[in-house]
Length: 87
Image (tube, rainbow, N blue to C red; front, side, top):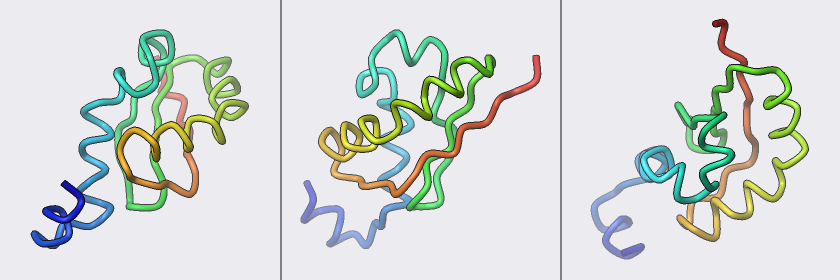
């Protein structure tokens, strides 16, 4: 799959779409119920939450989440940006 991605000229930004689409499978139902991957610039993944407590929780989990995302998808993000959405 990785060879096909390279052959087609798809870069990290394009592959990040798969991360967003597979978010729940990758992070699990508990996190997915409270946080949603919404965008990427290739090196940064933007995650939206509705509760500041979840923003804090994801910041604590950031290193592990970044590793899991890389393991599951082959896409290595440098950091997460957590945004709290107004209700």
